[in-house]
Image 1 (cartoon, rainbow, N blue to C red):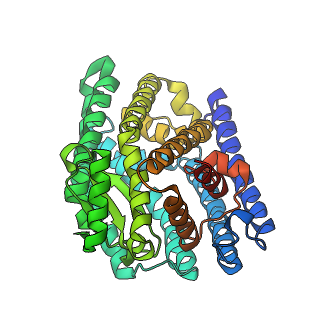
Image 2: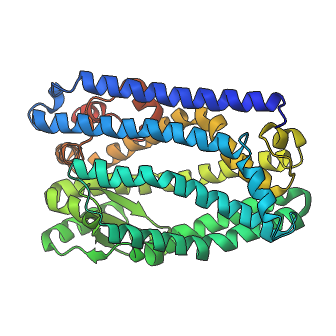
Image 3: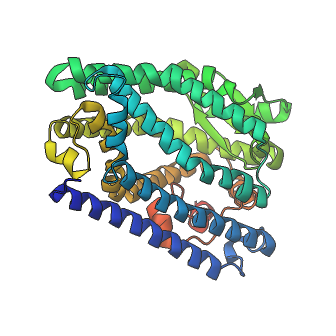
Length: 415
């Protein structure tokens, strides 16, 4: 293995990112355990102590699994790079395809994706069939899990393979500015997915039905009218066949946009509470949070492709990560393996931006629905989903896409 300055920069970045993740996880575990035996005063009347303790134990179990995931991910990245696994795969596939060929590159990328997925599968299974089962949330069966896995693999082949081949072809045939053409392709592809997923892909995994409760449907129609929102429909999704968690979300673009409620949420909340939750989701749309997120992701992908376009011809980049074969597919795999360690510092900024959007959507919601109904709905969801009410402040600031429960409820009560 050839070692250069970039090797040490990479090891430092990976070590700092992994160590920070472990430190934050341990802080979260200590903080949640320390507040396990007392319900915060904000929620004392609505959430009993056993439910609060269940949420604490659930949070700790997930964090402990997260520690294993962090260690496993770091080990996989090191094995593929400095450990020589990627170079070995390159050499093995060279026995079947010329190294500079499109098919050799595709084989390398697909093999790495499959291996990483397979190595992470045990933790996924443990999360679903042990942790989620232990806390009463799992509804997934082995048959359904395997069916989902098969469908996901099929979609990856049908939708992902052509995209991969197109990018590999652009990198070899489009000249110096291939990265810009690849960005245009990826942006168009992302928009395409946002259009087709609600109508064609999501129904492969779940059943979507119109709301049957006439009173609820009428209430929601009035809300949509007040908000000036038109969509292809409002649906209830059979989320209960996989999990007892409840949720709602907005999906799609243009004519394909729709609002989806989990059946678990509909069964637990009263119509005025559901109306308030929907007003929050509509706030994301009316405030253009979804469009802004698409633009932000597109801008970041342009930046990443530009950096990749520079790195693809830099020998020190390959050698620093334990690879001697200089090709675009190799550079792409190395970039995808190494980049998360360097982009780790962006995570709290993205979380802060997301929490800002959540506060804005809450303000929109209370201008079209009752703030008290949104508060009671959120409290019910915190309780039913076993969301911790006492997260570690630093852990929350770094990771949480939604504001801490106490902070969010306090703002709503003073609105």
